[in-house]
Length: 431
Image 1 (cartoon, rainbow, N blue to C red):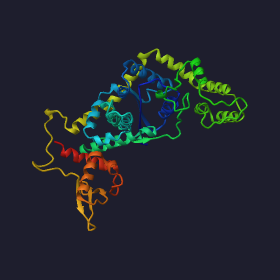
Image 2 (cartoon, helix red, strand yellow):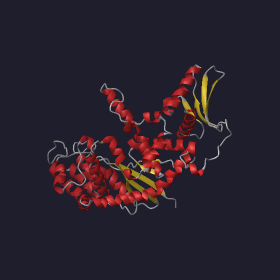
Image 3 (spheres, one colour):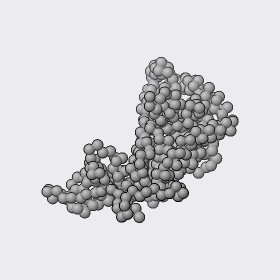
């Protein structure tokens, strides 16, 4: 049976909360135990530098997140569990991918566009406060994924774009240098819960409405007691729809327990009693994990050794692979002699090309054709050759999205095929 390789990372910028446990940690641990899978889990501390400038916070968050995963049952003997910054091959691969990734692709990244929109709304210069790290974030994420040839990457819907961008980078590199990368696929589990926070909004550090995963029993009870409810008195029927308290309970309870609370809502349970039920249910799940967590958090050297062992395992794959990629792009030992030239002096390798033409209807068109003559892209009509030429320029500069509705893909052609062909053409034209 073929083995499917999964890869998951978490940025080390905060303390894990109940929402992280339900939405990421618990399903991750469960997924790691599936037959026929190989699993890679990493602490994305390079990514943390983009969001956080507090070294102590990053170090503490790395410790807390590692301890949380291990306390929740992640078995480092069964999975490859490592810290991103312990794999020097990842930043090297980031640079190799940077050299085949168009700026137009990165211009469309959601995080970058959101930063620009925020600046525009505030009347600031478009790139005010935008670091190169934020702009290049998708390339680093692509390196994380492509380094270990992951087949599947579990993500939320807001992260699907990054997986698609990683596919584009892999396709561009493969087109130029041969088949080296696996093209990853995003997997979205629609059944994973998203928990509301204390104020009813999504539980998030940015909203300051979280319940830390390993709060003490006393702190957990106090925080649950502060969950926002409405003014309905004991005896009045209450709605489960939109109730943060009910949604959190549901994420930790069995179906029978959930139905019992639903009935209690209809019968007018007092909010204080409902909160007590929630506290007892959550604590029954978290208490044994909390004990393991406290043991781990007070012995950081054990966690360090676990992560270093995971990095050693990861590097048995990363080190030979980066050596393969270096050779592919020409970063080779001179003592081994130069590879024979592929073509006679003065000859040019076959490349994809644009062909502009005029039809009998008097309109102007263009098509993008692969080196072997395969039709990659066909344009709609333009009233003047200048318009067609400008459209080609936009396509080369900003990618497919720039001509939405103005082009159609050839039969059997995917976006990645066009991206790779554009990259090859761009590389050939570079000085």
